[in-house]
Length: 141
Image 1 (cartoon, rainbow, N blue to C red):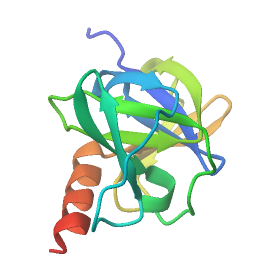
Image 2 (cartoon, rainbow, N blue to C red):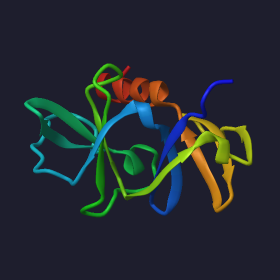
Image 3 (cartoon, rainbow, N blue to C red):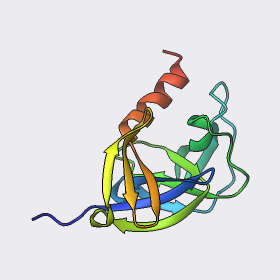
Image 4 (cartoon, helix red, strand yellow):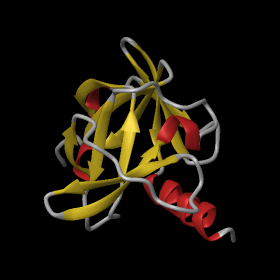
């Protein structure tokens, strides 16, 4: 029997979302950002992360939920997945997948599953789909 996976739970405009904890390298306070010319407005800018320039995307704005307020947290993704960071509203915590009571198919693009937890519902995000969607938004294809 394999060990349960761990999910990082966070909020976007008051709604709960999750990524596999292994997909996230670190969580940081919002650093100074530098503008990126000619990209969609969901790209807040680029930050310095341990000497690497990393684009920061406002996930709420990318999903059409409206731009995040100033502040929040930055999720820096594992560089083997993508050189990218997401601005989120706040971090709710880390859970093991064995706490999921029920799961259903995703209700929108880039959401793989809707997970029912003891304290409410969250949406498990499709990281590959998000990265692909961002690439399309930048290239216009």
